[in-house]
Amino acid sequence: MGSVKGGPNPQAEAAKIRLHELLIEDLEHGALEGLAPEQQRDAVVKAARELIAQEGIQLGGSSREELLEGVADEVLGLGPLEPLLRDPSVSEVMVNDIDKVYFEREGRIFRSPARFRDKQHVMRIIERIVAPLGRRIDESSPMVDARLPDGSRVNITIPPASPKAPSITIRKFRADKMRMADLIAVGALSEATAEFLAMCVRAHMNIIISGGTGTGKTTMLNALSAFIPNTERIVTIEDPSELRLQQDHVITLEARPASIEGKNQIKQRDLVRNCLRMRPDRIIVGEVRGEEAFDMLQAMNTGHDGSVSTIHANNPREALARMENMVLMAGMELPSRAIREQVASAIHLFIQISRLQDGSRKVTHVTEVSGMEGDTITLQDIFLFKLDRVDEDGKVHGSMKPTGIRPGFVHKFAMAGIELPNNLFGTAEGW
Image 1 (spheres, helix red, strand yellow):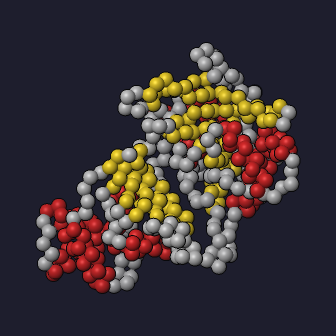
Image 2 (cartoon, helix red, strand yellow):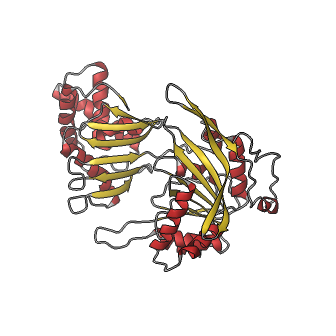
Image 3 (tube, helix red, strand yellow):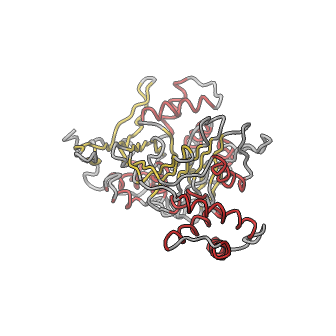
């Protein structure tokens, strides 16, 4: 784990607190309403400059500009976290305590010099996150999942659930979604694998993207969705909404937690059922995590081919077991064999993504669901990540290779007018 040296200047911190208090009085309620974010920031900086002159605060050069930036972040944003949120190379921000702020960059975690003044400062920032969403966080409800205006995901935990200190975890939203060419360029998968996956999407295969937390499942889902023809009607179901599809004909449905009174909850299962009445050509479920798995399998088995979803699992076999458990969560009194038959007939392909020891995210398996043998679902790997070596810096070297197995559903490519390139699936040599 890396670290970033340096810390807050006590003189600047004292000036920032004083300026913040004066600005709250100076900018009367509603003074910034109706202004664009850039105009709001300009107004705050202008007012801060005037107050620095009035109060005679002595800070020169860069310290003065840093102070103005810090005050604007306190008034308009998330205080000490704003510089990390603005940095496009930072993918995740984690607050463990007032003086323990970490961030993730390129799959590795570093410690930030940013810190909060005290626990009240952290709580004020937390209130700023949850208040616009109509959510409540207190001792009776100490955990909240929320979303920032830019789409970034936030998880907040406060005492008594996290007894030592409030905790904030922000998964940043990428406005510039990576396309398949970008994933190939960073070595997440090979060109041949990407070509095969594109054909699977066009041929209406049902695909599940599996992987651990932060491995890039949603990024892969976004990249795959680019291969859906623009003529098709797509319904997306998410909790929370993250996908940014490039097609014109997209309907976005979003689950909603219960209100403070415990009412008005919208479950993903309700949305899956509802979308079947919306004449979808494609159903995309951002992440299957519960009872909606049963309804999604039913949809896949009743003519809604070409569905894509993600699931938390460490390998394709584990993903199958999770699917089975989630169907049982729906309260269906079905024998295991009947559930497995549903899964085997509904899902054509698993794409497994893993985060390797050097922080890189790679597709490690492209695996066909080939049917049933007795009570067991059979899987066969079409492409696998082959590890060559790990160098002295800890960097992983390897590549995606075809296993030589030709998937059983390739006849559907011809039916969809897709021509298979020669030797796409290679040979079993080298395995």
